[in-house]
Length: 497
Image (cartoon, rainbow, N blue to C red):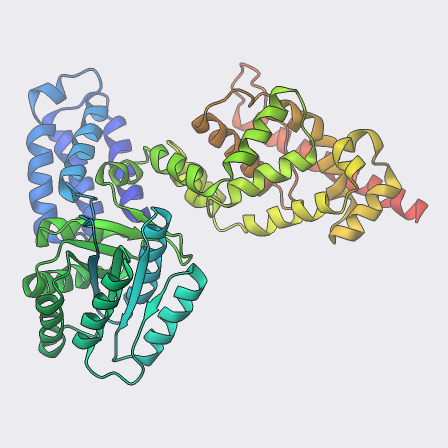
């Protein structure tokens, strides 16, 4: 998310770093690039104007210009002002000892019903018994969708077939929840294609008669400034307690997320980062500012790892590594754990300094590459997975390749590189969560860099920086070696087929 802002700000800071000495003149020149990147990312003009006034006032001050690293000082100023722009955020849901009512509202197509399910799942994870209420009577499909989500999540869904009064549905649902001792009720109210008076009156009546503790506006972040304008209209009518911004995983600009708090006064409390039901997370302005500036978001990464990964399995893997035991079975399980974190690009985006790596990887299908690797390992016998380099010969290699639907040389590459990989993995013993995530990331990069899911050995520095000509020659030599190896494998296999 926010790729456009990230790229624009990175270019601006690179321009500042490229100056021999920073003066007020070239500092203002660099800040113009910061301003342009925000406007191009669809941040509201009044918001950009106020933001740049605050940043410029501090950035051209004597304290910054005369510091040892003025360009780094500017990054710090922008980081601090981004946090102020999006925050502060009160993440408390203000749950009561008995039944708490949360009301979701929004326009059609914003992802409101799906968010209702995600919200229910999040509360269930926190140990709160939750009921979902199908009060969007304008769309029968929304009622059916909520029942499907409730069944998937193991959550009760209240609806009244044939009902025409959403206010009565909400009242009856809350009454039933209180009678059954349910902790939280989430109302999925009706939406419209655009803001209209009828919709607002209906929502105001529900708010007045049901008295929800919190009212959240669900908005599609990809609609840009339309999202901010509709948030403003809903806030004026209902007095919102927070915004839930959806589809941020698909929004390359993100201007709405930077504008909404400043224009409406209502903070973003949660963000939707994917289609899966676990893709709803609390919005932390400081962490998001870090992501935007390429500083990563290790805190969220560790939280997701602790929530999504099997902690017992991680403990078993750690014990095996500390005993010096590492097999292809262990490696497969480790990659399976990282896979639970989501797409590799998302994981990389949360690691400091990995923006360039994400860009270099482009649109490669890393999921397919990993699936090929899993297929190779799954086609091996237990003994082969324990000692691949020792017992996998030519006939076994052909059998494994046929079972996995890959070429024999792909199996050969995995076997050849296993020893180097094992040494690296054993070196992870005793690492903390952050270090282990970075190490796992390096293994996935190795898979993504090799179309056949081949794992490269760790590179060892020579202490000498190669010239472009030397790099070109080395690349040509590697290509020649690879052609020869493939030719040899093909002829060996034909001779023994």
